[in-house]
Every structure is written in structure tokens, then in C-alpha cells.
Image (cartoon, rainbow, N blue to C red; front, side, top):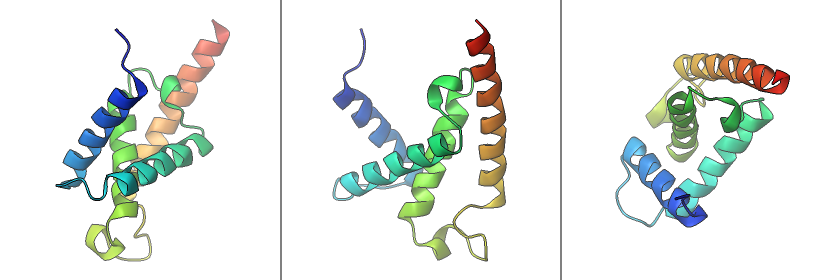
Length: 110
């Protein structure tokens, strides 16, 4: 049975809060908004979840990391000139972009 949009949102929000180590519900709307912005950022970079078959866990990790980077004060997450996105996160985004482009190309040929 397919999950409802509300069930998917609740599941995603629970995953994000566990990743970000956030207790309580007072920031749920803020976290959800930041997550949606992270997904939009990835889509604008050419990373669309449906094109990432086999790399869904990496997609979710990158989306959660981008969400956390926007949620936490930058000096807590990282410091320096590249505070918003650390080198590791940039590498994950680049890897995911490559995987998703290949999957999309294969799907378009079918």
C-alpha cells in the first residue's frame, strides 16, 4: 500500500530530527521548510531522487546534511570560508550528481 503524503512527511521529518539530534516538535515546520529547500537545491543542481535508483540512502544523507547546515549556526557545523558546505558534503553531492545523471540517461534510452 502506498504511503500518504502526510505519512511520508512524518517519516522524513523523524529521519531528519534523528540525524540532526533534535528533540521536541517546536522546530518541525522550520526543519521541514529547510528540507524542502535542500531538495530544491539538489533538483536545481540536476539531482532528482527518482533518477538516483540505488543511491537513495546517499540522497537522503545529502539532503539531511544540507538541512542541518542551514538549521545549525555555521560555527557549530563547520568553520572557515566554506562553512555552509564542508568538503565531504561537496564530494557526496558530486558523486550523487554523477550517479543520478547516469541513471537518468539509461532510463531515457529505455
